[in-house]
Image 1 (cartoon, rainbow, N blue to C red):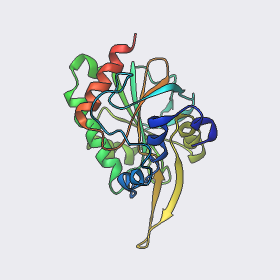
Image 2: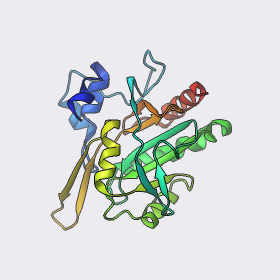
Image 3: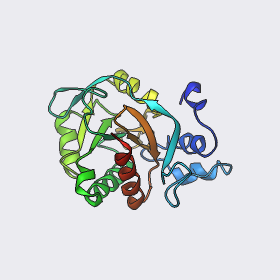
Image 4: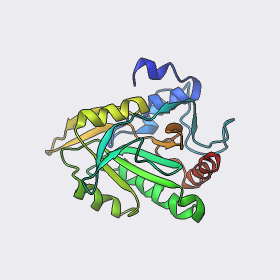
Length: 223
């Protein structure tokens, strides 16, 4: 996270985002224990902003960056997010743990939303590993959770340009002893409104019921 991003945040919000670079093999709880001054909010009572997740006091502007969807078509993060609510998560299909857990929670939340609310929500999975995550690979992965989820890929520098203003850290690859590599990335989910700003962040491990409550609230606030 850049200094300019840090200046936007304070208190619990900053504490949360500082530990969200666990990577897919990292341990968020261990990171949190190293920061006793700020608790990681993973569900419970709503904060003053009404969200059970972390409301951003100064919402992040979504950059108008063109990526590629699972059908190979161009997809602009601003022009092509046409629903009132867009959920965004940066991850990769070879992720050993966190990515699948987050996607399963989001899929479960979608099934529990009221039908009218669900129709207002779009879910985007942006790969942090474009070398391996082609369109067909992303499509097969996402269909395991919800066929309505869209996957996006593109050149890594462009993906990094999309992640940076949204406060998502992509820290590159780490070789594994047995071969291959893993990708370190921020594990937060962003809730984006119709004005193309990220207004709320959920940490990995947020209860599904809290996601349902917050997504519904965000949808109700649009329009």
